[in-house]
Amino acid sequence: MADLSADDQLKLIFANLQESMNPEIIEDIIHKEHRAPIIYWGTATTGKPHCGYFVPGLKIAQFLQAGCKVKILLADVHGFLDNLKAPKELVAFRAEYYKHTIIALLQAVNVPIDKLEFVLGSSYQYSPAYFEALLTLSTQTSGHDAQKAGAEVVKQSESPPLSGLIYPLMQALDEEFLGVDAQFGGVDQRKIFALAKEALPKLGYKERAHLMNPMVPGLAGGKMSASDPDSKIDLLDSAEVVRRKLKKAFAKPKEVEGNGLMSFVEFVLLPAGALRGGKPRFVVERRDEEPLVYTDIEEMHRDYEADVLTPQLLKSGVQNALIPLLESIQQAFQASPKWQEIEKKAYPPPVEQKKKKEKKDKGSKYPGAAKGVVAQPDGSVEGPRKQEVDVARGPEAEMERQR
Image 1 (cartoon, rainbow, N blue to C red):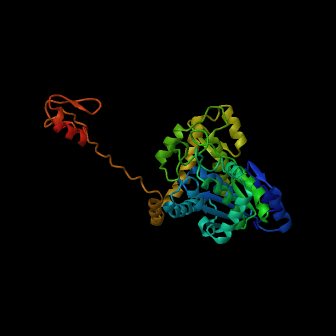
Image 2: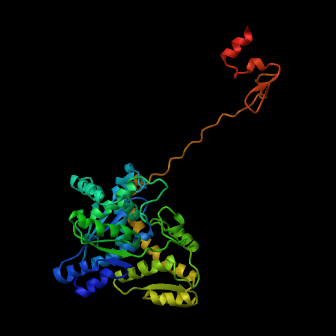
Image 3: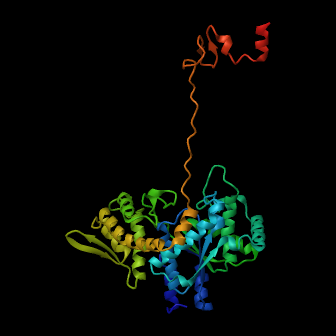
């Protein structure tokens, strides 16, 4: 266990969470069983990881500081179950890309990766025992409940594939087959967590705790999405691209609610400062004035609402703190030919479709066309030589004409 008191461990585990379900499970493990809680965080290996991944990354760092064991599930099977967000032939490459990326991201914020365990979903989700449990769970869960559970996670469509109903059932079962005490994820996973809490005991499995971090708004407001380039900053974006995206970021003056940059400072940049051996710290440089130095988010909120910390200053501060973090990841990428090769296989450039040359309808007036006829809108022809070029008559009509 970490060299911390039980109360300090619990304080770290529940810090910065928006909600927790069955927290007493974690409390009993630490106070009564005197062992390290085992927590898992899963990510479907679909689009490229972006800066939003720093949010769970920093929380995972706190779990590790508290002495927890952490398993990271690279959910490759979930990737193509979610409406084929990851084509099956690319899933294995994307899972490997995610592992490289997550390791580099955690190293950028000084998380000791030797305390982590990476698990590939397909390494156990195709086993007979897992498949039997999945079938049994499907008999205990209605289609309505399965669809409701995945509503905020699985891509929705007018006629959704059946795989979208299987997705949340598998995520619930993963808790048992990974042998964990708790599952960690965004608050958008809450309905799946509720399904697991209710369904697993029906199969004779124990209940787990569920720990949820807030959803950080994207740069354009709303949810940060891998499919919306304006809502996120990619981990491999250059400093120039980061500056451009941050300049366009949505940050309404004096309003903290829905401010993605402010949330990013709260859940990433301030905790990252603490991981570097000191206290949480975020610095905003100002021209011809003393810099603004923040060690807690409440002070930042007050200054922002008072317009002491303006949107322009906030963007500048985020830029100056984020670019060095990304440089660390990008240096790891450039130093790893294997990672670079995996990126090409996992996210191949789209194949350009060659335009088919359409045959133009030249009509009857181009050189070489039959003279003495005029094409009509219905495709027929009229004129003195109509009978020579009329192809719409049919064989019977032509034989009748020659009698």
